[in-house]
Image (tube, rainbow, N blue to C red; front, side, top):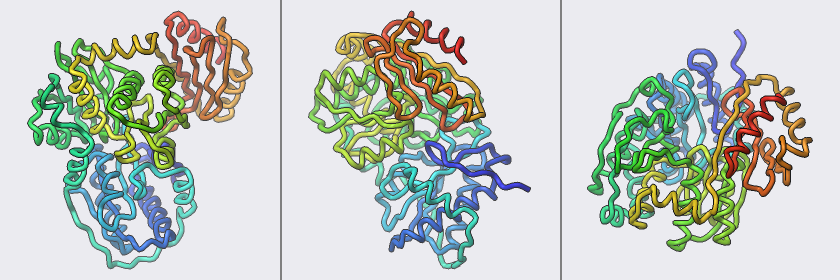
Length: 457
């Protein structure tokens, strides 16, 4: 039988369970990671393993722990479902850690499973690292049979760290009304525990782990965050809790782009210094705020591994992506949905205003309200993807809108008219889709661009 082709996308390897993602595939990847680590010639010998609530995730984690034990490693296996950011934190701060392995397919549908290696700088593996790991696929590996497996809860040191970077006192003083939607995710038993520890009041729903995430997608988006209540903000996380989602007191889902713009302004106001690091898909709203605050911006390809790399090179105020991942300079260089929700709550409490008011204020500060839409085209043929991208790159206009600037960083981003309208064309890193991301301060421009796309593909 032909072996599964293993490729690492924007954040590890993902595949359909029992088709692409099997014990055989996991063994091949674990062997390759082990050989990669061995060739680092490090004196560190501890590997952390965690897993989210997905089907078979714990089984794959236990299987991997046994393999690594037989290769001579000390394996620290989470006793229970655990968020990715906590595993990443342990990858850096656990004694003698050389890195971590996490089983998660993030926001993918329930039939998917995934595995990723987290180096001991606590962020996603770079392309250079994953390329190196792939070189060791199907190479022979020596069995040592002298390692060990220790099962532990992983959150204690992470919680202490949060207490140093989140102002829980201001949250308790001016606490907004909160609904925590567990959304069947890995955040359950962690985010609620943090709130309980600091006597922060909240209501909750969907507070149990489900391998099919309650029949929906494990995404903290409006479609799946159904428990709204007048006067309450609603916070949630995705399946492995590295992304966040939030709804304001009037029941409005707030785009991660607007959250990034708000948090950038907030963090600067409390004295944070450095750069705003953002992926190419992030809203033009963030660039406008950065310019008004005289903050340097650094733009990267899509995927937090690129943000993480820049965070490790630059003093950072905030790093974020439009899909709901963010971190800050005094935190780990990995997206963290638990931390993100707490930071948003801190901002609301310190400003002593509703989230709805803060959204209005940031739009007034920007001087425009941005609207977004997306067109997805299923394309398995990379040649066709390149043809379409080249076609759009060579246009001088998109319908009646003149192209003012072209950015070829990850796909192609076209800035139109006054720069407040843009079109990003890029292939998904996790699904066989060519995506067209549209943004403008005018809804009429979005409709115009969508019609143009449909006529030219």
